[in-house]
Image (cartoon, rainbow, N blue to C red; front, side, top):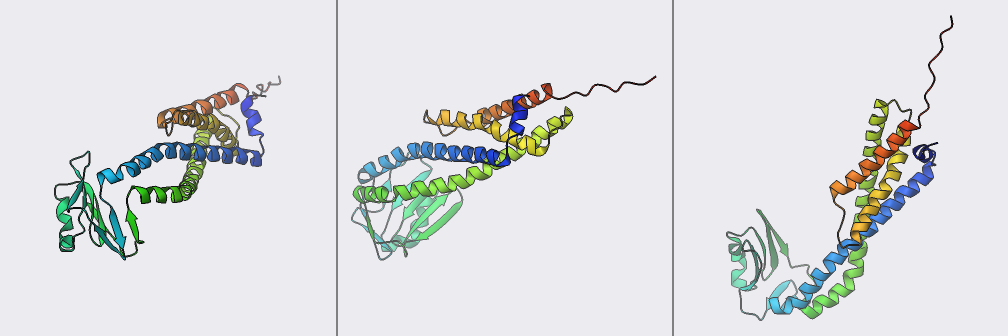
Length: 252
């Protein structure tokens, strides 16, 4: 009996446990790799805030600063503008800073206005908590909320990978079924689902390997390529170990 046929004999519970393990490993690997990339960026922003921007006080929904205004925060792109202008008389003219700019943000006295391409959104400071924004307070906030943010990101990614991996298994099982029918393999769709679940293991481990090098994933090409290679190998194994009935003998 071939390896693929042994996989088909797995119980539904064991197959489900393998799939859940793959989902869990994929979620942890991506979350860990993502956090490893984001954390240094956040740390850099916090450490350099005092050198880049003035201290901002938000009290009762009103933002103020002691710096000379308008205060332009330096950006690497000419198409992006970041401005602090909390002067009351400039509240209505904040959109002027977005002229000829594709993106940016303007902090006014009572709101934060954000532009992304052609979309402009105004976020009121009315419900903002009273705070002072500088490197020290940003670091305290980051240390306080980092565990919560990590858990939230893990939860969102867990939902994503659950949907994504189940979808991948169902699609690859369907492809396997179509190929199996072409080669006259007597294998049910449920059997191909089990094969697709086991074939998922090397693809997930490939992502883990890439994650250990600091990359988020192995890339769609390598992932799908390995998945197809595993499924193809299993289908070939099924074909080579198929039971061929001898032709019926004609009685004279």
